[in-house]
Length: 154
Image 1 (cartoon, rainbow, N blue to C red):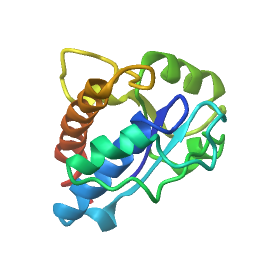
Image 2 (cartoon, one colour; image 1 turned 180 degrees about the horizontal axis):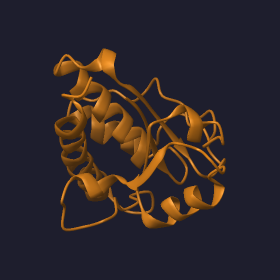
Image 3 (cartoon, rainbow, N blue to C red; image 1 turned 180 degrees about the vertical axis):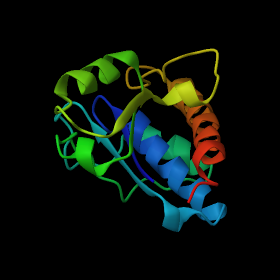
Image 4 (tube, rainbow, N blue to C red; image 1 turned 90 degrees about the vertical axis):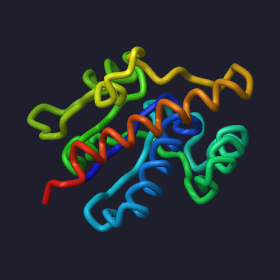
């Protein structure tokens, strides 16, 4: 299963989801069955590490994000990924507009898998520390739901 998480700049929400899912898959003994990555619809941060506040919040919960580097969604992703999960409706709409005709990837909102009361993972970039903790709460629930949904499939 090849999963790509997408947010705007690939320095807060989507790298958090990538790191959390990688860690949870490893702990569940499922890492070999999944390929996990993240990207942004924008190109402002390409090549940069996740936001320092994102890394600090993740580190407090045992997730290491420091090796990740931001990248931008590429049209090839729509052919090389099974599931492309947007963190919010604006990025989902952007992905739908850029999707090449005939691409097989399934597009969805990430939180559609959780049954959460909210549909979008809020962007914590301009807020305080609590926003990064909220992102982690939502991402952990989403990753647990993804593992429940796809972990038993061959």
